[in-house]
Length: 444
Ligand code: SF4
Ligand code: SF4
Image 1 (cartoon, rainbow, N blue to C red):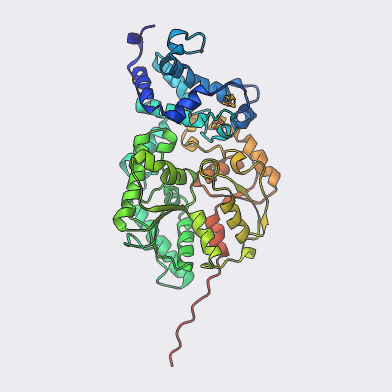
Image 2: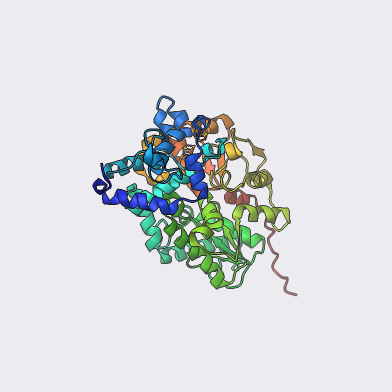
């Protein structure tokens, strides 16, 4: 088959691949020695032991074969393709098959990456392959839908500005009633404060109480803070879709709002991919330096307790709790100890889950998997490993610092009938808060 028989989309994918290759990607594409040490690291493999097509190295080779054919530095793939197992791509059907591998058989959790002695980061070039397909319109329908909402409406759940502001007003009223203080409102677009608090749109749509919980904590800490009327969505579907342009545009909205309002710090609510995107990857995608400090709310809350800015009573959280490490927070951003430290300050019965930290298994909802309904059966089957991990803790409730993991865990807990509740640190901290009521001034 000649170049001229290649489909237009394939031609575009191959050209774009050349532009996306960087040193890290190149290293991962050439370094695999097929030792198989990553195989057992993958939850898809463990749940499908008889199917070798789930092995990370096998999946990686589906991408490697056309990289070798066109871009390996020694040109071996071009002159001796049979030797290095290089093969080009030709048809749209082949792109569709690749789509089912890169979106449907991997959550980009990076567990195989940290278990590779050669430093192969499969998840990174799996993401690149997703981006190549997205650039020619080949992607799961859910990915197209969510990306469109984030491009056009400014947040990945299509929440309209008036609905967002109404929710903040509603939560302000609830808080004022609860605390009996008309000053306990959520400030909006207040300039030159310390903290701009950004959230996951899931909180507006399905879990507004988490916004009120955070506001209660800021109130108790007497923080100078606000929420922006725009640029408030710190999640970023570009991380999942592999679309760096979307990633850059979304991150830029948050950074620009923070600069415009003159805040000192952007604090991100508990969301693994939002934290990784905004704090770590966003500046590269947006090709910008960010002059504003950025922090996960886990660190903010922990600091408040340690500095004595808030008082907590751990006896108020009466159940047994375990902790699920979000892949993005933990494996990719190193947030291992801080959430555990905070959890131990607000609950009495904490039970570790094994394996944990960098070796924790994905909730199975990572990499945007919750939006790809066509792969739900495979996702739930791969959740068997996480379900066994959860069950072995014997805990009543699993705590996680990620909204995506809340959804992934909730789904598999229902599927495997585990009867475990799912919550976040913000809820437990707010519940444990000891706020001394101010006595009204006496009239003498
Ligand atoms: S552990 Fe690394 S080198 Fe070994 S098969 Fe997996 S990716 Fe290749
Ligand atoms: S990144 Fe995670 S889901 Fe993907 S192959 Fe590696 S271990 Fe499996």
